[in-house]
Image 1: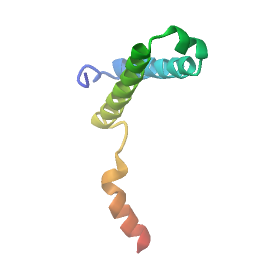
Image 2: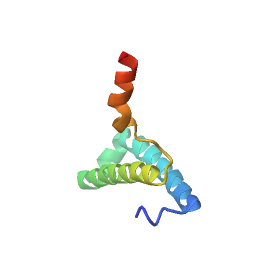
Image 3: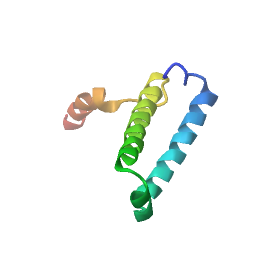
Image 4: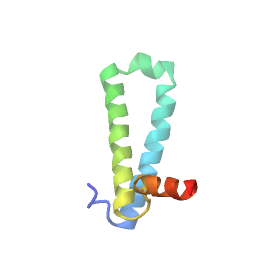
Length: 83
């Protein structure tokens, strides 16, 4: 999936769709009617899908240099600040 998201326009479409999905899911989960009318298995699937696609977005951003993972530099930065 990461390779499929290589083109910038495809990646941006994915980010936009994921943002819309996230907003819609948050709104739905906050609705009592949604919980009354939707089986718990379906709700859990939506939540699991959201986690999967967020992880995919993070991996894609790293792979295509859109985000820097500062975790690997954390100790070095802490040492510099301490000095």
